[in-house]
Image 1 (cartoon, helix red, strand yellow):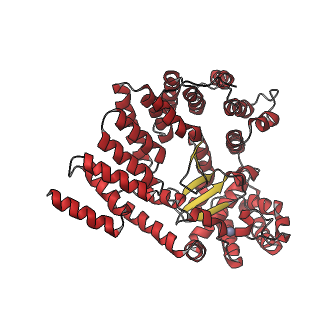
Image 2: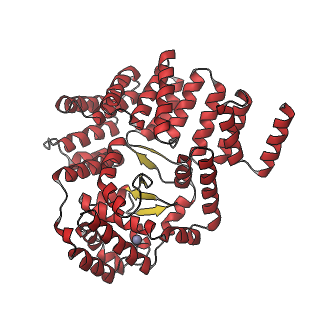
Image 3: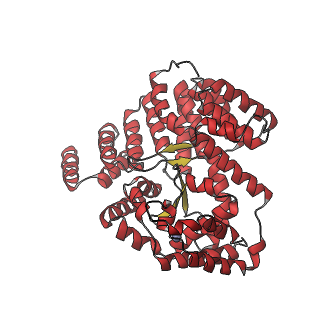
Length: 463
Ligand SMILES: [Zn+2]
């Protein structure tokens, strides 16, 4: 075990974020399960599923895939074009083809328009409309990304569990999946194999069923209808490439190593296993076991063999940062950014080190990098907003700092806090600047009618 760390006050505040934000980092609204963000995993996932999403008639750039850090076997579509895949389901897929099949099925629910009706019926009309209203207002205010974030952090995320599609919707989504898989030249074998593995769930009552099969009820007839369809498709014999299979295994191993007890990782990947994935998973497990020195040693050995892998530097930076070695962490994160320029999460990691080190030039660089990352993510990153707020505070720019804090809470769907930070930002910022107007927009979006009256009285008093 590592000895207790001596940390500065600012570092302690940052660590409160970082303890959740270990790459893959997870963050959540008040009640939502954590959404996991990790550049490497997102890249693998996107590469796997983009072709079938495009073939389903949806725009792969408009469809947001969120990884939910939860061991439950579940995947849901929600709020227009968002697909939530639980890590429990990811871990259960034996190969890319199975996961692609599940995503094709979810895309079938989206393109079939099954979602809106279900959400209104089951998730409750009022919160759904409230969130969509926020999304529309946020989009009008030039921050479209907040819409998806509000959806994922809103209470109805919890209600998603009870969506439940009808038998005819299941059949339609299966048929749509088979069509888009074939169109993309991908076998439908995986989705049938995946469902087949859970065929026994059909006989359970809901209390014993996995959530995914409560919402997407399996039946013998359903599986057989799908099997007949995909087996007759010309591309049924297509298989995953060796490269895709390896990437899928890496994604599963990385997620498991971050989410499980380290001992489970050490059991699965004993030291005798010298494959890249095993070494990578063990390095993460040492980090999870609070053995940073051993973790860094293992990562350095990996870097020696794979010097161009940006994610090894990212992991090293993460371990060093949490060991209060910010300057060394900065060097590692800087290398990850060099190897993978323009990846927002890598820029955010680097910024976090720069803020802790806190020299004026470093703070300037952090602000610049955070704005760049937020630009790429369409403002949809609460952690980046929080760091930006800290950077502005360190630069003695309290109005900008309050505005960034307002953005952070707005992004998490915490409207009361968003409003109060935005009100304070308005008092500190110069009137009629873009920042002051943005603060006003947030107040208006998050305000009650009474707030709006008060605001207009206050503003007219200042004219
Ligand atoms: Zn379904």
